[in-house]
Length: 218
Image (cartoon, rainbow, N blue to C red; front, side, top):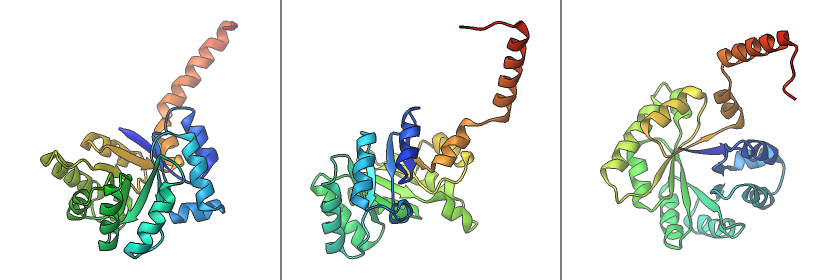
């Protein structure tokens, strides 16, 4: 399973890349805005850190605008994946960019039928938002199960399921069990995956026992 980092904070991406937790990066206009920097500069810097796909999202809502922005974004670096919303204009733009050989991440997916349409439009990734469905008392992980099953039924569909809006480690474990190809996680959630109280307590016990010996490894 591939881990994408959902942030535009370059320092966070570098730190996580050092421990092998960055197979790619997802950004969006909100994350770029938080960085306080120009989008093209941020995307270029991130693309230098990881060879994996870095999603850069269009802000236009019409097809012509999306297409123009998508072509601009893909020219920033060879590993840019253009992110478009799951609207009719977005699907049309996805088809056009995909036909040109540009990787496309179709975002804001909330139903299995939407995911099927994105795959038909040639999407490289589909991004179902599990956390936002959970917020509405709907089962976000059931959507992942449905999309994974549908894609498996039709091997000609090459779109990868990229689980988005991941809120906690349970989302991550469930997505992996279901066979999702990718999950994009905020840095804080990746660090939550590392932590376990029994790991901390076990380490404390080992170190306390070692200290009693009065020895040093070096």
